[in-house]
Image (tube, rainbow, N blue to C red; front, side, top):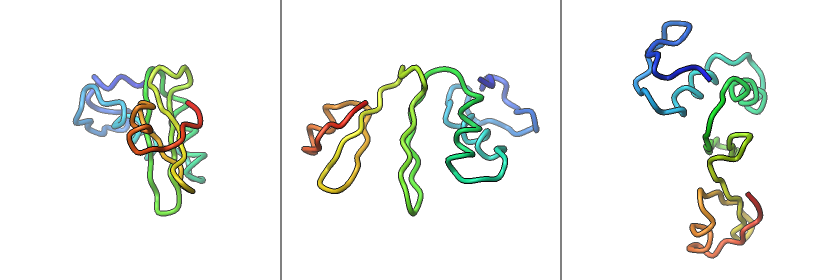
Length: 102
């Protein structure tokens, strides 16, 4: 994973955080080759090691991603006809969503 402690990326971009992997992922996503968002995410996340989970909302979709090792929890549930994502299953219980899987 690019070291976020190095406050300047390979192209001279200034990172405002030393520890937020989200910012590193956003910079990698911005530098990904053109393509669909799924292709760009795949390209960016292939360069990252470590623990992370994130959700991305677009006008048409919701993307939920966690690190390949599953160190950061991310639970998928259903609430009526909608998908919901939470970092813990107890959050799904609070809104009476049905847990589907990690």
